[in-house]
Image 1: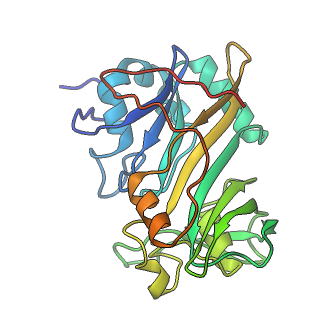
Image 2 (image 1 turned 90 degrees about the horizontal axis):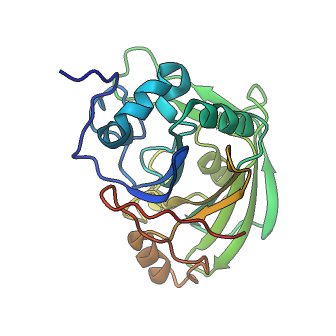
Length: 266
């Protein structure tokens, strides 16, 4: 009988981009939920993390979200920071609350926005599923009744077929990048929740990847800049749309059985 609050599962695989005694940075694949919830009790990233780091995560406890400092949508791939010690969690939580952590996403969109560089400032309101509608999910909409929300972006490549954008959310609202890009006329390919039907089925998955995260290490004070490569299925989509591949350095792959610490200099 497991003594852990979250059921460990060795079936859930993940890769590491960085690891030390205080924290890890995980590269989550698309289609994997971040944490257990309705319909996903034992098949999430956190279940896989408990299979390897169960002792450390259990010590952090539910009050510290078992080390999870932020989350990605199930359909979104990319980097997540997980704390392994209480003091690391507390310091990184402070950095998140003070907006000192930089999160950068690649998004393949149906077309380039009107302005190649800008900031989307549109308040977002969370909408709960309708009572009795099983399977509906919480969503966000642009609304004057919503919370202030801002996403900085720049266009990296564009063609008559689509555009590759980099987004940096300056706030942390539900589905923020997806809703903001749809609101400026650049919905993300594969977004079955917010994009028009033709765009929603124009990619094999949601074409959104968290490729870079920057923060101050909670113990050493070192400025950390962790990066990951474009997933192969999204690389294929870029080539199909005649878009230039991003020039970010390739990620150093690490597996749960052979972790390899990696730090990219800024």
